[in-house]
Image 1 (cartoon, rainbow, N blue to C red):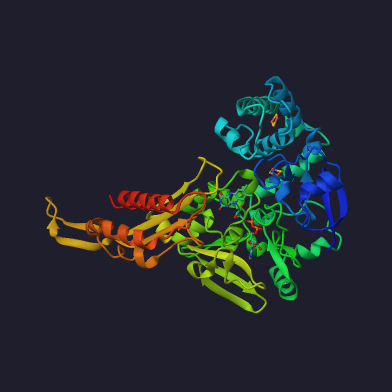
Image 2: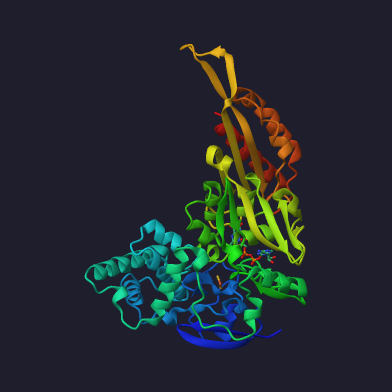
Length: 496
Ligand SMILES: Cc1cc2nc3c(=O)[nH]c(=O)nc-3n(C[C@H](O)[C@H](O)[C@H](O)COP(=O)(O)OP(=O)(O)OC[C@H]3O[C@@H](n4cnc5c(N)ncnc54)[C@H](O)[C@@H]3O)c2cc1C
Ligand code: FES
Ligand code: FES
């Protein structure tokens, strides 16, 4: 099916007609001649294809062309007249940070995205910002030094009143700055900056939930949120044959984040980047999503996509399991609340019907506020690797629940011993679905601390019998041993 897509490309309006599931990378390079957008891995790993989408760094190989309708896309060419580009350009040359140059458009865009938000970044912040951009030639130290020097020069110029903000007629920077300003504020208020789209792709980019649900009920459509799973696989079509993508990124209800008592209602369409910008998310969720990939993937990938893709390796999913989240599925026929444990039917399979959207994740937070928790990823590399094994644990205590009147303190007051009120552990990447067995964790719930400590070996032995890891890139025995080590370390530390 062909669709008309209208968007701003480096400040100019572009109208294009073609397959909305095509990679933006291919549209930019092959059809619009933007060859400064480089093609490397085509699956989100190298950053060569980086562009700014409404001011946010993304990998254009993971963005569907239909997704950019009514959006602003900025490539390196769109930055060439800015003061920031001039400073980066000079600094890269001064530090000999360019050899073959293939990675450099992506590096500059990653630096631009960083400096717009963080004008004076630390070295650690620079390294994180370019962590999704691979360079085969230069070594990263020169690139980091160049970005640092450019930041210092720009800060000096801004202090002297002649910084990037003083550049007149800088349309590209205005586009980027406006969108970033919106993105770092209330995510629900991010507005498309390009002109209204011509009929076509707009029909597959609904802004209201009822409109999206009508479309899902009427047609064979596959929801596409960030597209970081759907578009990651070169040889898999972005959607099953005969179906089309329904872009859900503009639906306000999927972007909301609000409290209801001690339950945090998380819009399924919030990206990891948007969630990390919000101070109120529980630390266990923050740690889980901060471990996911590099900024460009985190800027696109959503928490809803991480749950709906039904991968046993989903990091956000693991945090949702140990907090006992409930998922809100909505269709034209109504809505249903599904406990996370009942959502999965196997690898890649859930109880979601094709006409339903995952709209919200309801996360109880009382245990995360009071309890002790851990989130661990064991992978082939320290960072940016999909896990070989992942583990999350959350334990909460009631300090007043278990008075030990017989165990009087030397001061004559009764000791109170904490009692375990909540224990949840979950293992990722070891089976077809995340492994969470509430009945095993229940062995320790209600136990006073000392009693729970004596029951740890029994709890671990039950887990040992229950865990049946599948063989993957590492052996089943290795996975099982790592799982048990992680569980032991967590429970002993938490109950000490
Ligand atoms: C380089 C790279 C590194 C990665 N690293 C990690 C990692 O470290 N940890 C990790 O957990 N993941 C990782 N991922 C996987 C991916 O980024 C995440 O799973 C992400 O959360 C998927 O979200 P999305 O919005 O991009 O999903 P999409 O690709 O848009 O969709 C994924 C699936 O969910 C469905 N879907 C999406 N939203 C909804 C909705 N609201 N209602 C119903 N169905 C919906 C889609 O139809 C599709 O089947 C990585 C991916 C890449 C490319
Ligand atoms: S081509 Fe490698 S991230 Fe897109
Ligand atoms: S300069 Fe060659 S890949 Fe970076």
